[in-house]
Amino acid sequence: MKKILILGLISMTIITMNNCSPKTAKKTTTAAEPAKPAERPAPKPVVNNTPPANTNNAKPWEGKTTEEQVKMYSAMSDQRKDMGGTIYKTNCGKCHKLYEPGSRNMEEWLKIMPKMGQNAKLSDTDYMMLCSWLTQNAKK
Ligand code: HEC
Image 1: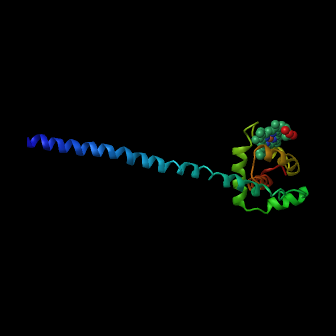
Image 2: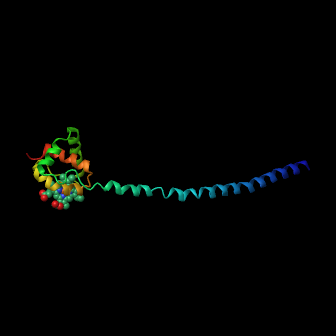
């Protein structure tokens, strides 16, 4: 008789434990759900941050004569000129062959460069470093 009673007690505790566990599991899922919609609006500020970066419409080389541009680019550091060479090699041979920098003089380069800089989607800084490298390597 004692054994039956003990078995009964054990099975009773198992049944009560099983009844409780689904309830706690349900609570955690309902608690986790409202967290998801709160995460979604987060990317919006990133979209809102984009326009101020584009409001800088005037490029540093715009409205300058060829002579003034060459002066500006020549004055840039050797380190920047070297970086410009890397930018040239990685961005300017994608749509056509990589033109020899010595195939044109600076005046000719600066006529083509604004269009090609846009083609290659160069940042203002990368564009200027590229042009500074050209001042060293263009036809004299
Ligand atoms: C998205 C494609 C594309 C990229 C990237 C590109 N170009 Fe061009 N490039 C062209 C096309 C198309 C032409 C044909 C002529 C034109 O559009 O004026 C051209 C022509 C040229 C010419 C010859 C122009 C002439 O009239 O003699 C040179 C030089 C040149 N590109 C240099 C560059 C340099 C430097 C870069 C890197 C900043 C570059 N390109 C990146 C598309 C591209």
